[in-house]
Length: 71
Image (cartoon, one colour):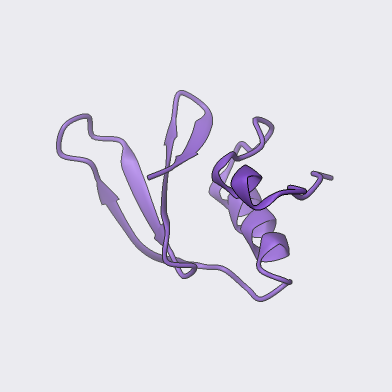
């Protein structure tokens, strides 16, 4: 189980242990007061071909080399 961030600034940092999109969805849902976060759109970045996941929380995320990051 992952700990939720204590401070607002920590929301920009995702835990390193997240591996799959399902784990990301679970984590983001907990951050969103248990209101379900889901994938709205998936596309590939033109420059590197990495999949970008546009989520229902209004943010986009990518998983490069096993590390999730917010765009």
